[in-house]
Length: 77
Image (cartoon, rainbow, N blue to C red; front, side, top):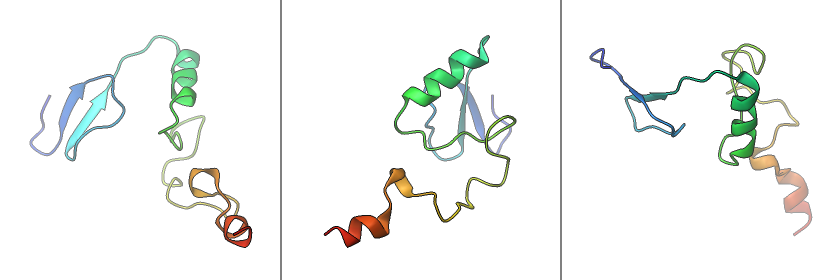
């Protein structure tokens, strides 16, 4: 599917090239969440019942990249 701006392609990979959007159909939301939790490359899920839309790029003081407290890491060197 193409709307002239973005190409939408049914594909299993959650990662897509620039201007492409991969999507999948699913029947069981719980199975989908389990699949997402098992993928170490996915840092957060945005949507209803998860992080609110617009909040993924506004981390709190206790949210660390890849779960590593940078200051504690540096202090331990």
